[in-house]
Image 1: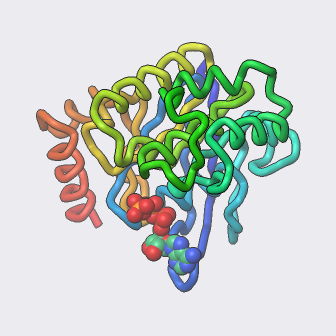
Image 2 (image 1 turned 120 degrees about the vertical axis):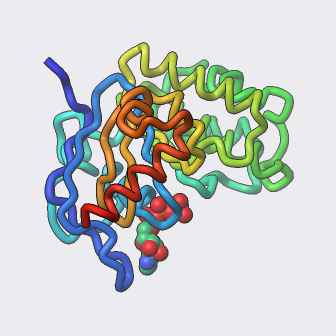
Length: 240
Ligand SMILES: Nc1ncnc2c1ncn2[C@@H]1O[C@H](COP(=O)(O)OP(=O)(O)OP(=O)(O)O)[C@@H](O)[C@H]1O
């Protein structure tokens, strides 16, 4: 039987005057890497916020690992790394991680593990304020990897990172998924789509496709995900 880590039904979200979602349904498979892709402003962050339980929603139900999104039971089971690194500027990398590790009750040793995973060892004694953008976002990512979350929600985790580091991070996501963790990664870099197991393609708060990388290319006859996405958008436009 296929297990879903996340189930979204009838989601309606209004932000400002914009109806970002108006009756949106989707499910995310457990233990897989699901890529959430789509153009800027299509609702990726809003959907991630809704799944994590920090978005005010107008209607709908969201079930995460069997519990309502945002519920207390999920506090330590769901980790979220936002686009803007949510870390303390005046603390060092290690101090930030030690702080969050204590808040989460993560095992000792976790701080060093995540520092190594995101390759921040040489910067661990540096204050966040003096780090580059890519280094800061890696601290945020490391924070999300503390403890043993069952669901890892990452909003554009590879923005501003060099290709080698991106490669390394994707192999971390893969080993997490292999160990049963559900990973949701948003991106607007279409070539990252090919690294995912499942793809959710959004446009203007609507589901354009819920497929796999192979399925995406097959459905469209395209040779790369950028062209495939454009083809699907054109088809959706014609059907509308
Ligand atoms: N606080 C807010 N007030 C008003 N409108 C908002 C607010 N936050 C987001 N929006 C609007 O909601 C829509 C969806 O935004 P969202 O951040 O979810 O998009 P996104 O797909 O994550 O975009 P990006 O790839 O640029 O980060 C956009 O039209 C955006 O302008």
